Image (tube, rainbow, N blue to C red; front, side):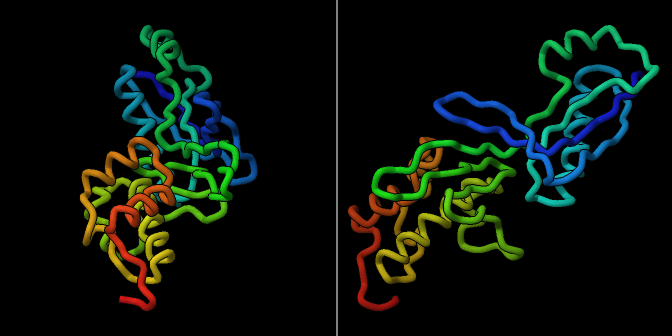
Length: 208
């Protein structure tokens, strides 16, 4: 059994033109550390993930990278070299991915973060979309996926704005279609326009 120091460092995955790099985000929070014992690569991975979950519980708004290193004085186990080569000394599951796409020509704000299961959706000119304290109409459709949840809410807000209505997205929309649009990274404004063109929500002079 080998003792490792696990460190959570503020960072984000920055993506542009189908390439990405992990960049530090200094000043967000100080590195957080924890020690754990591991007998093999799988137990080290489990320990890193558990530590990351604890850090995430402190604040869901943190984006960070978890890394592992052997504590001073401890001997490297035989599985250490292969674990290092396979990327097993770092866990990227808690990183937010930031897109660096150019502004869309018609002035539509580009997507800054598409989100993930534990990462929020965000447009470049808006705050990230988080779940509310209580479940809402989008919660069951998102199935615990935070990024998809925020994307759905952004579409619904756009449709309501353009139609001057309170129409609910899933009153008239097939959930499977929305899932495919999200996986294919369709901009929420484009999806809202598509839904309106298909007659899912008809503009009103007043609210419903």
